[in-house]
Amino acid sequence: MKIRTRKLVEGKSLFGGIWAYITATPENERFTVFDRIVTFVSRIAMFVVLAGVFITFYEVVMRYIFGSPTIWVNEMVLWLGAIIYMAAGAYTMQRRAHIRITAVYDIVSPKVRLFFDYVALVVIVIYAVLMLVGGVDVAWQALVTWERFGTVFDPPIPATMKPLVLIVTLAVAGLALNNLLVDWLGYGKPNTEDKAASEEDRT
Image 1 (cartoon, helix red, strand yellow):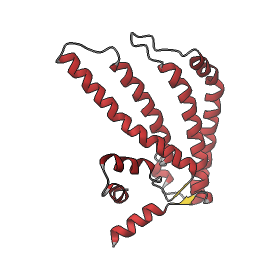
Image 2 (image 1 turned 90 degrees about the vertical axis):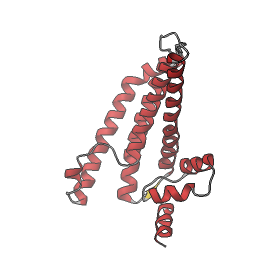
Image 3 (image 1 turned 30 degrees about the vertical axis):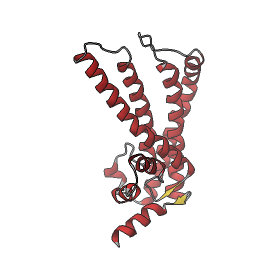
Image 4 (image 1 turned 135 degrees about the horizontal axis):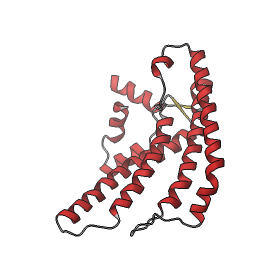
């Protein structure tokens, strides 16, 4: 990863390097269009962290230097943090870095690993279906009524986050199926960028 990241940003401007990183292929051996979409969105969300840092710094300056605290920074940071958390869940699943008992998974045979992956897929799909059945009405009502947070700033955090939770849950379930197809059945496109970067670094 470090090799390819360096190759991506060499000779580019700050924003050119950032854009090259955001639009680069996922960092696994094979990938699908679904992988690319989730990686693209998740990498954008990484930079949302900076927005949260900047507005928090602004609040500190306004509150403790000018004595004029804002009414919107706390809720905005909460809102951005929730979005980042959702994107991180999908990104973690796409990277195969989700919670797994690796001490067991790594020592068993490939057939047992495949069985474990099937079990994990079934559990995730059941969870996603239950979340959808139990939460779609609540999320829809929050969206159509544009439910707000109930503070002075009153942002529409519930109206946006309740549907986003369901969307990300379905995306994670889709990624679980996607990963199984890519890892075990050979679906997807071979990642030539990582291979080319590694070969160029060796030369």
